[in-house]
Image (cartoon, rainbow, N blue to C red; front, side, top):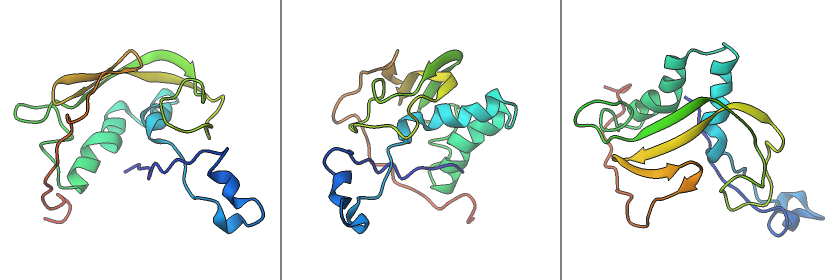
Length: 151
């Protein structure tokens, strides 16, 4: 499983709290937006297979969190949470093109192959061509069962 705690802070105001005392620096890094693309680099370089990428990013986390088969698989009765991925896209990660509310990127200037094109949540398009189309209130509480690995 690959995960991120996605705990972003702005450099200008929040990270500067540590000037003079590094213990006051808020810990965290904004990474969730780039997670799929960064892990896909393993597919692009031949280090992991495409099915393994799906396992790492979707199926295994859903099983571990007790959300499978509602999440983590495309089949009748599941939630239709789908990422349409363009493996031919190339782009450069930058603070200028991310959507997170932070003023820096730990991955600034890194060129990646592949990019999330469209995201569906329960069958509804919520991201298309880098634009967020979701709305407040669309999210749902997900009651979890036991991890598939525990039973």
